[in-house]
Image (cartoon, rainbow, N blue to C red; front, side, top):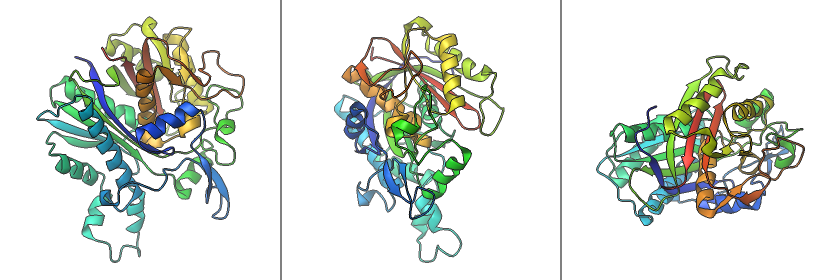
Length: 387
C-alpha cells in the first residue's frame, strides 16, 4: 500500500451476538459480559449444549429469507443512515467491498442434493456472495465497483484496506465496507473444536483468556458489520491512516515461527501510515486466546511498539466472528474514540503486563489493529482520532 490521505469511518452499523445495532454492541462490550450463551446442539451432540455467540432472531423479513441476508442489509443500512446523519454526502462513485468466507450457509444447505426441489431461481442467485452486494448497489443507486474479499479472520481488515486503496487511487469517491459471517452452526463449530482452537465446554471468560495463562482458545461468534469510508470531512468516528497486508506462505493452520512476515506487516503498516511507533497507545489485537497467535502478536508488539502500550482483545466478549472478527473489533475501536474509553475484557488470570483490564479511560494516541488469519494471512490497520 501507499497511503495518500486519511480515510474516515463516517458511519457504522453492527449486528452481533449482543443484538441488532451498534449501540447493542457497544453496551455489551462496555459491560464486560460475554455475548455467548449455552446453546443446544453445540456440546458435541444435538442434545448437548455448548457456549456460542449467535446473532439473535430479528431484523427485517423484507431484507431476505435468511439470517445472513437480514443481518448484512441491517448493518449496511445502519452504517449508511449513520453516515448521512454525520454529514456524509454520497459521491458519484460509491463502491462496495464485502468481506465474507463461507457466505450464506442457510441457502447453501438448501441446495444440497435432494433438498433443492421447489426453491426459486432467486434463492439460488442469493447463494452467490455477489448477489447481496449487487442488490445493495441497486437499492441505493451506487455505481462504483462492488467486490467480495475473503482472507479468513483478517477479512474485515482486508476489506477496509482495499477500500482505502480505492480511495487513494481515485477509483471511487466513497466506499461501503461490509463484513458478514453467520457460520456458527454445529457442523462448522465442531470442525474448529477438532482443530483445538474453539471451545464450547466452558464459559467464555474462562476458556478465552488472550495473553493470559490458562487460555484454551476462543468461543465462536457471529456478526455483520458495516462502515462508510470516505475522504469527506464528516463528524465521523476515526481516521484510517494506513495499513499493510502479507502472507506467511508457511502452513494451512500454523503461524510461521520465525514471525518474519507478521512483524514485517506491523512495520509496513506504520511506514504506510506515516506513524512513528512512539505515537501508538494501543494494540487492538486479534487475540483469539490461542497460544501461537497470542505469542506472535505479543512478540510483534514487543519488537515494534512502545513498552507501555495497552493491549486488548474483545474476543472473550463478542466471540470470534471469523470473517467479521476484525470488523467487530474495529467497530469497538471506532466507538471507543467517541466514548473516550477502551473496552478491554476483564482479566481473569496472570498475564501480559500490557493487557488492558476491563473498561478503562482512553489515553490519547494511535491504535494499531492487527489480524492473523488461519493459513498465514496477516493484516494490520493503523487507526487514529479524527483530524
